[in-house]
Image 1 (cartoon, rainbow, N blue to C red):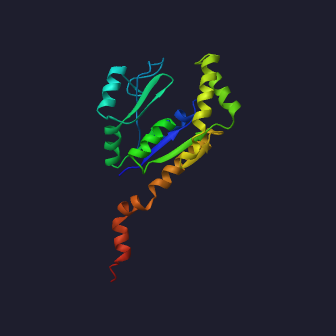
Image 2 (cartoon, helix red, strand yellow):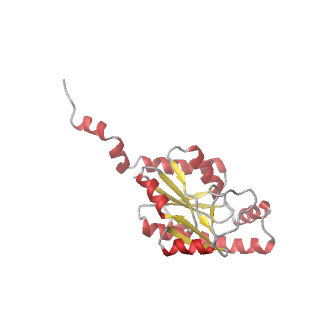
Image 3 (cartoon, helix red, strand yellow):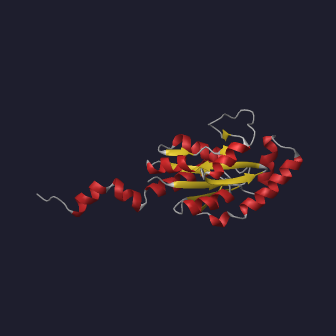
Amino acid sequence: MGLLYVVSAPSGAGKTSLVNALTSAQPGVSLSISFTTRPMRPGEREGVDYHFVGEARFEAMVARSAFMEYAEVFGHYYGTSREWVESHLTKGHDVVLEIDWQGARQVRKAWPQSIGIFILPPSYQDLEQRLKTRGMDDEVVIRRRMLAAVSEMSHYSEYDYLLVNDDFERALGDLRAILRAGRLGSGRQRTALHSLVGDLLEPKIT
């Protein structure tokens, strides 16, 4: 079985950039593409950034338990395909979910062995400046996002690992180290090194 990683962070902490850099250069790691009812933004692509669906389709998927987790964020719904995630894990692929704390709680119930990673900004002021620099929102929306960020960060203790994105390359290195440690866990290594362990415990002495 592959390992399931849940990565959360407040908006503007650099979570998406870090996760994209991690999964694009890490063999055997797949990023789950969420479904959302949010309108597509300029530059986004269907099936690459999100699966963009209407509320009626989203609600139908909820009704048939198609989501491992789903949540409402800023008036729009986001959800993770249960079938897609379980299919990849069963094939031995590691999967990364980029979701908020609400979704992370649901995933822990559905998949207790999941590994949670929370990414913090270096300071409140730095996070606010990042949101302003993006130029995507007006002051009212930024205020709302900052309030939501404080709420999101209050759940940091529910995760297994806590990172600070004060330096992108260092934070990316920390993420890679977590995945590397997961792959060296005894459960996975028992399978990968089955032949070697057998030879070591029952040596063919000549």
